[in-house]
Image (cartoon, rainbow, N blue to C red; front, side, top):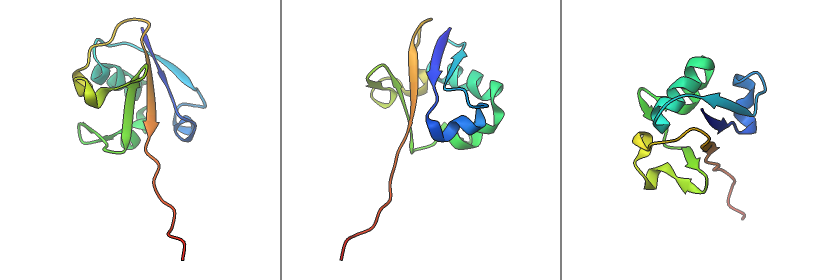
Amino acid sequence: MAKIRIPTPLRAYTDGASDIDVSGNTVGEALGNLVDQHPDLRLHLFQDDELRSFVNIFIGDEDIRFMQGLDTEIEAGDSLRIIPSIAGGSACN
């Protein structure tokens, strides 16, 4: 099994769990297993069947966007991290 690290803002949808064990041979399968376990996460991670543009998934230090995306293969013991993009602020006058 692989493990997915859940960022603090999304832990409200995982009953407070920070790490979730998931099954699957690809990142997409692992995320599918994650949202099967915690269905309320789906809206925060996916739009239809695509990963939302502001959600970044890393395996170790590697962004899956620079790999094979959701088709990136994973192995038992891999550690995935969900990193939501942060934007905002205002211009100083």
